[in-house]
Image (cartoon, rainbow, N blue to C red):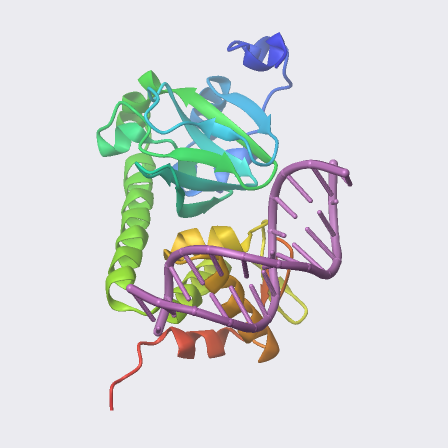
Amino acid sequence: MTAWMTDLSPRKTLPRLDESLLTHLPPFSKLEKREIRTILDQATSRRYNEGVAIFDEGAPAERFFMLLDGYVRVVRVTPTGEQVTALHIPAGQLLGIAKAIGRVTYPATAMTATESIVLSWPTRLWDGFVADYDGFATETYKTVGDRMGEIHNRVMEMATQQVEQRVANALLRLINQTGRKVSDGIEIDFPITRQDLSELTATTLHTASRLLSAWEKKGLVQSKRKRIKVLNPHALVVISQPKSDL
DNA sequence: TCATTAAGAGGCG
DNA sequence: CGCCTCTTAATGA
């Protein structure tokens, strides 16, 4: 890493960030141009390559972040060392918002799933943002609630559903939140391996691979290395429903 | 119903 | 080539 990339006063050297970067994003959508200008002038902008950590689980939460472009994987490491992907975050969302959940360290590691552009601010500005900016608090707490809800849903699924249903549900969530419409279906918009999918659903790489192969034969999905496309979402919805025991 | 183990094919840098 | 991703089959909890 060269010195300029870690320089925390890059405002002198970088081009001014445009207000339009934030105006349409939920936490900032209610703000005046003047307020957004102030926020941007305090921000640091940085590009990350695919597959690198933006921050690490357990580290002091010195900054909070807004993902402007790309996708981020939120991962935790179990005591035995295996990675578990908690969720994926698309562009336009805040991350690393430890303060919002009353923490002084990051609760998970954030890895870029694609090349990404990220704004960040020192955590000491957080309370000021919450107090001064209309809608910032409600929108960010909504985000926190949505994420907790999603994780909770998955915990429930682990306990009550079979693997096939969990994987179907995971795929549906992925295309809903991070899907890109293409001519014949919806494609997950970032590279995702069978291993990643198995971590999301608490199964093995092999089972995830077999399920995808089986669904591909039935024409429900199409996949190649690190790419999954859903051709028939409705059929996946059917699979994702717990079988009624007749 | 699934995880585990094993063996290998094929892509990519 | 060496590593990563993915596939498939066999076995058994």
